[in-house]
Image (cartoon, rainbow, N blue to C red; front, top):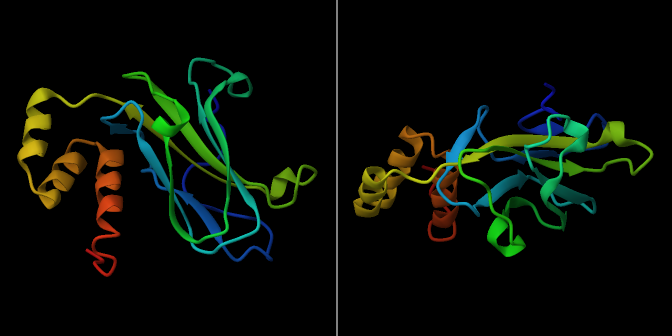
Length: 173
Protein backbone atom coordinates (compact mmCIF):
# COMPACT_ATOMS: atom_id res chain seq x y z
CA UNK A 1 0.00 0.00 0.00
CA UNK A 2 1.22 3.50 -0.77
CA UNK A 3 2.56 5.45 2.21
CA UNK A 4 1.81 8.88 0.84
CA UNK A 5 4.27 11.78 0.67
CA UNK A 6 8.02 11.31 0.79
CA UNK A 7 9.41 10.92 4.28
CA UNK A 8 12.06 13.03 5.95
CA UNK A 9 13.25 16.56 5.19
CA UNK A 10 12.07 18.06 1.94
CA UNK A 11 13.01 21.04 -0.17
CA UNK A 12 10.74 22.73 -2.65
CA UNK A 13 11.49 22.18 -6.34
CA UNK A 14 11.48 25.92 -6.95
CA UNK A 15 14.95 27.52 -7.15
CA UNK A 16 13.53 30.61 -5.42
CA UNK A 17 12.95 28.54 -2.28
CA UNK A 18 16.09 28.89 -0.14
CA UNK A 19 14.84 26.83 2.80
CA UNK A 20 13.57 23.36 3.70
CA UNK A 21 11.06 21.74 6.00
CA UNK A 22 12.00 18.84 8.27
CA UNK A 23 9.58 17.03 10.54
CA UNK A 24 11.83 15.65 13.26
CA UNK A 25 11.27 11.93 12.89
CA UNK A 26 13.54 8.96 12.29
CA UNK A 27 13.55 7.00 9.03
CA UNK A 28 11.44 4.18 10.48
CA UNK A 29 8.58 4.13 12.93
CA UNK A 30 9.57 5.06 16.46
CA UNK A 31 7.71 4.85 19.74
CA UNK A 32 6.36 7.50 22.05
CA UNK A 33 5.26 6.82 25.63
CA UNK A 34 2.46 9.41 25.68
CA UNK A 35 -0.90 9.18 23.94
CA UNK A 36 -0.76 12.94 23.35
CA UNK A 37 2.89 13.75 22.59
CA UNK A 38 4.54 16.92 21.39
CA UNK A 39 5.80 16.64 17.80
CA UNK A 40 8.60 18.81 16.40
CA UNK A 41 9.71 20.19 13.07
CA UNK A 42 12.47 22.53 12.00
CA UNK A 43 12.49 25.40 9.59
CA UNK A 44 15.83 27.18 9.15
CA UNK A 45 14.31 30.40 7.80
CA UNK A 46 11.07 32.29 8.47
CA UNK A 47 8.62 32.63 5.60
CA UNK A 48 5.25 34.18 4.85
CA UNK A 49 3.95 30.72 3.90
CA UNK A 50 1.71 28.51 6.03
CA UNK A 51 2.46 25.01 7.26
CA UNK A 52 -0.36 22.51 7.31
CA UNK A 53 0.37 19.74 9.81
CA UNK A 54 -1.72 16.59 9.57
CA UNK A 55 -1.73 13.39 11.61
CA UNK A 56 -3.62 10.66 9.83
CA UNK A 57 -5.91 8.10 11.32
CA UNK A 58 -4.32 4.91 10.00
CA UNK A 59 -7.44 2.76 9.86
CA UNK A 60 -8.35 3.51 6.24
CA UNK A 61 -6.42 1.36 3.76
CA UNK A 62 -6.62 3.94 0.96
CA UNK A 63 -4.40 6.98 1.62
CA UNK A 64 -6.95 9.33 0.01
CA UNK A 65 -9.61 8.22 2.50
CA UNK A 66 -7.58 8.67 5.69
CA UNK A 67 -9.30 10.89 8.20
CA UNK A 68 -6.93 13.23 10.07
CA UNK A 69 -7.00 13.12 13.87
CA UNK A 70 -5.22 16.49 13.80
CA UNK A 71 -5.18 19.04 11.01
CA UNK A 72 -3.76 22.42 11.94
CA UNK A 73 -2.19 25.36 10.13
CA UNK A 74 0.76 27.33 11.45
CA UNK A 75 2.19 30.66 10.38
CA UNK A 76 5.90 30.19 9.74
CA UNK A 77 7.00 33.68 10.78
CA UNK A 78 9.95 32.37 12.82
CA UNK A 79 12.82 30.04 12.14
CA UNK A 80 14.04 27.18 14.29
CA UNK A 81 12.54 24.35 16.27
CA UNK A 82 8.74 24.41 16.37
CA UNK A 83 6.16 22.05 17.82
CA UNK A 84 2.58 20.95 18.22
CA UNK A 85 1.26 19.56 21.49
CA UNK A 86 -1.45 17.02 20.69
CA UNK A 87 -2.98 17.47 24.15
CA UNK A 88 -3.80 21.09 23.26
CA UNK A 89 -5.72 19.79 20.24
CA UNK A 90 -7.64 17.15 22.23
CA UNK A 91 -6.00 14.45 20.10
CA UNK A 92 -4.77 11.10 21.36
CA UNK A 93 -2.99 8.24 19.67
CA UNK A 94 -4.23 4.70 20.19
CA UNK A 95 -1.72 2.31 21.75
CA UNK A 96 0.02 -0.01 19.30
CA UNK A 97 -1.23 1.82 16.19
CA UNK A 98 1.18 3.38 13.68
CA UNK A 99 0.29 6.93 12.63
CA UNK A 100 1.73 9.01 9.84
CA UNK A 101 2.23 12.71 10.37
CA UNK A 102 3.23 15.20 7.76
CA UNK A 103 3.92 18.87 7.27
CA UNK A 104 3.08 20.56 3.98
CA UNK A 105 4.03 24.07 2.93
CA UNK A 106 2.06 25.25 -0.10
CA UNK A 107 4.70 27.06 -2.11
CA UNK A 108 2.70 27.82 -5.23
CA UNK A 109 -0.85 28.03 -3.97
CA UNK A 110 -3.79 25.74 -4.72
CA UNK A 111 -3.04 25.66 -8.46
CA UNK A 112 0.61 24.62 -8.16
CA UNK A 113 0.62 21.77 -5.63
CA UNK A 114 3.65 20.18 -7.34
CA UNK A 115 5.74 22.92 -5.70
CA UNK A 116 4.63 21.93 -2.17
CA UNK A 117 7.25 21.05 0.40
CA UNK A 118 6.29 17.85 2.18
CA UNK A 119 8.03 16.10 5.05
CA UNK A 120 6.60 13.20 7.05
CA UNK A 121 7.29 10.57 9.66
CA UNK A 122 5.58 7.73 11.51
CA UNK A 123 4.89 7.32 15.20
CA UNK A 124 3.48 4.59 17.42
CA UNK A 125 2.21 5.11 20.96
CA UNK A 126 3.54 2.33 23.21
CA UNK A 127 3.27 2.85 26.98
CA UNK A 128 6.56 2.26 28.76
CA UNK A 129 7.06 -1.10 30.43
CA UNK A 130 7.10 -0.70 34.23
CA UNK A 131 10.79 -1.59 34.56
CA UNK A 132 11.86 0.88 31.86
CA UNK A 133 9.66 3.61 33.35
CA UNK A 134 11.32 3.04 36.75
CA UNK A 135 14.81 3.20 35.19
CA UNK A 136 13.98 6.46 33.41
CA UNK A 137 12.46 7.99 36.54
CA UNK A 138 15.64 7.24 38.51
CA UNK A 139 17.99 8.38 35.73
CA UNK A 140 19.67 11.71 35.08
CA UNK A 141 18.53 13.60 31.96
CA UNK A 142 21.48 12.27 29.96
CA UNK A 143 20.86 8.70 31.14
CA UNK A 144 17.13 9.00 30.42
CA UNK A 145 17.95 10.21 26.91
CA UNK A 146 20.09 7.10 26.36
CA UNK A 147 17.39 4.80 27.76
CA UNK A 148 14.73 6.30 25.49
CA UNK A 149 16.99 6.03 22.46
CA UNK A 150 18.15 2.46 23.20
CA UNK A 151 14.52 1.33 23.46
CA UNK A 152 13.28 3.07 20.26
CA UNK A 153 11.39 5.80 22.12
CA UNK A 154 12.78 8.36 19.70
CA UNK A 155 10.00 10.93 20.20
CA UNK A 156 10.49 10.90 23.99
CA UNK A 157 14.23 11.39 23.46
CA UNK A 158 13.50 14.32 21.12
CA UNK A 159 11.14 15.89 23.67
CA UNK A 160 13.81 15.59 26.36
CA UNK A 161 16.36 17.31 24.10
CA UNK A 162 13.85 20.04 23.20
CA UNK A 163 13.22 20.70 26.91
CA UNK A 164 16.97 21.16 27.46
CA UNK A 165 17.46 23.72 24.65
CA UNK A 166 16.14 26.78 26.56
CA UNK A 167 18.18 25.81 29.64
CA UNK A 168 21.41 25.30 27.64
CA UNK A 169 21.11 27.11 24.29
CA UNK A 170 24.85 26.91 23.55
CA UNK A 171 25.20 23.19 24.31
CA UNK A 172 25.66 21.35 21.00
CA UNK A 173 26.11 17.94 22.63
